[in-house]
Image (cartoon, rainbow, N blue to C red; front, side, top):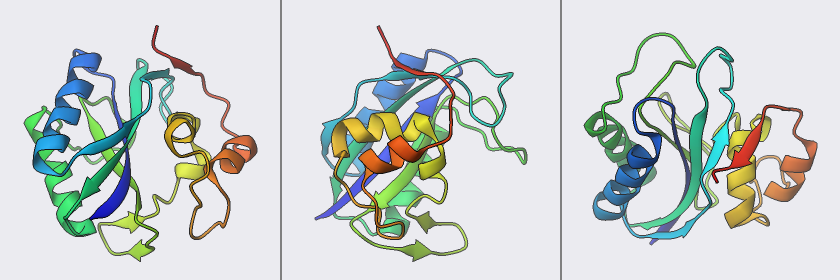
Length: 161
């Protein structure tokens, strides 16, 4: 079994329902979720004019390869109403990113693991630190706790009440 860490988020529609449905589909189509962070309300990163996102980090166990995992996660996004445009940082019903896959370093055209920007984003690091504080980044050779301390992103990230 492979271990992967994902970050889920969305800011359109019923955000809580979309996260719950995404988790349900991940568990049934990808593999069991072994850890869930709290849900966090986060300011939009990269396009601050957007409404707040709900974000959650999860750890999954899966028999899938990294590319198979990506393909299924993209299908789950489509099932939940995600449409991908050409512009970055737009509103969306759901976004599911692979942060880590085992301890592997993957650099392919459509898949880069570890996620290349995770160390720059509090909306990723705060929920991830809750479930994997001591996880080591295989390129930066720092744990999540240290990456969060060093992160320059000051956008608001707070637990959902």
